[in-house]
Length: 316
Ligand SMILES: C[S@@+](CC[C@H](N)C(=O)[O-])C[C@H]1O[C@@H](n2cnc3c(N)ncnc32)[C@H](O)[C@@H]1O
Image (cartoon, rainbow, N blue to C red):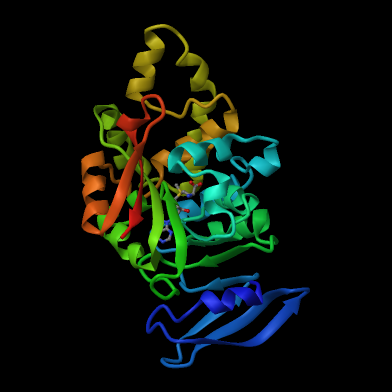
């Protein structure tokens, strides 16, 4: 953790000032330490350079596993790729000039693939995640001057209202117990005039079989699911067979990325999370409206409008 992060942090319980003590520093990083609330005396540890505002990873243990196993797969910088940057552009509609020198909140940072993009675009980004994905994200990009990573629950964030210039949450809110409540919970942290971009799974008949499979797969041990998800690697070739391939894909949907590691990761990511809600775009549009947003836009690429809801609005 950089000392500079302290000015943005407050106690998540009572929103009062935190005092740093017992710190062990390495260069400019606080590697270990204690953050104590001046008011309610709650204590939060800094451990492995990350402030921890939760004691467990609750219902996101599959993501703790996922992002530490597949920590490098979707990181542009580690793969000489621009896949995550292109994805970020079309999912949020933002360009580098929109975010440069702004303070951005990444809600559900995962292994940090989008925080990587945003920090390269010249923004200061704070990434939070409930899972131990934060350790992978820290390894990937935590050393950058303009990146801060902390382990926290989006339902109980350690910030004051109206702290951030812009916020985004990509593939996260539908993995909480209640997508709409999660959306409403984070809106207060955005400044008036700031923009919020989300990506949320869309409802559709094509999820019929995977929803049935998920009733089993979400109950299997995570390590077993890690090996079972690898079936996506050879299935890719079977899915190319005319007619039979389409049926196989419909009955046992698996990710179809050309890169075999992406197929494995995305299949694991689909079949393991405890919560996986799907919504329609008018539903998400209404959340933006009800939360006081204007200039609400839906971003689509190809068929994505049907299966993925990418929406952004400006807070009034
Ligand atoms: C599918 S991953 C997406 C990660 C990243 N946004 C990406 O697109 O690569 C969903 C993430 O949401 C996080 N998450 C779920 N519920 C959360 C909560 N209540 N607070 C913070 N993070 C949460 C999970 O731990 C997980 O890392």
